[in-house]
Image (cartoon, rainbow, N blue to C red; front, side, top):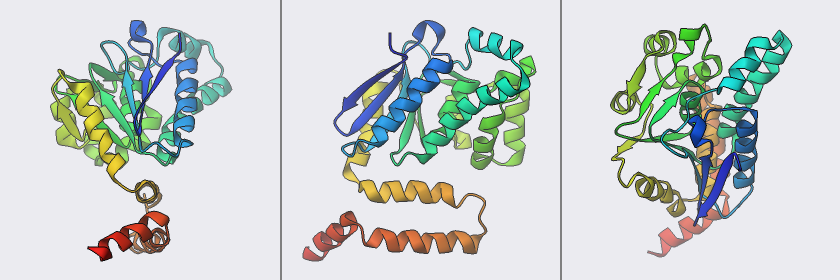
Length: 251
């Protein structure tokens, strides 16, 4: 049984974590399959967005038992390499040109919450639950801290990462960690409709905007503005922009 189910709906690629009996817990095989699927989608010029969702009752419950057992018996060097595999997934989500949308239902916990947070956009059901419970077993949600800290201030990031409590979809929306909430009934259709908005936008403009948003992280204002100047100028000479201007002027 494949670790990730891949389907295409028009210009939308859906990647479904396919370990429902394990609450889609992350292991080496699932992480590798997700990376491969992201790269394949990014290379398909006909696509405009990617959705990551979970099969069964939950989005993703974090690392599975075998992964935790592996951590417990591994050397420091082996643990560094193992942690890097998940870090590479988080980075890849930001590097692909397409918007990556997490569609969260049920629970998104630990590494599963990190996976959702790593996506460009997060949609969730009203009943979804989030959390970073790693600290309860002496673990540190370390890689996602780099992402969470860019989404939230110090105080709230500290609270979420060090207290390990679960929080509701409404709390996630209020914090800005979720873009939009939907009812459980009809959630898949709502996600498809939301993601399909990118079929009506310029692929090159969206890709350049995504790259710019992450490229200016940490810049001072003047540096960020200057990078914007370069991207703006590059956008003007793209085929999409030239055609868009021509259509606008014809009206």
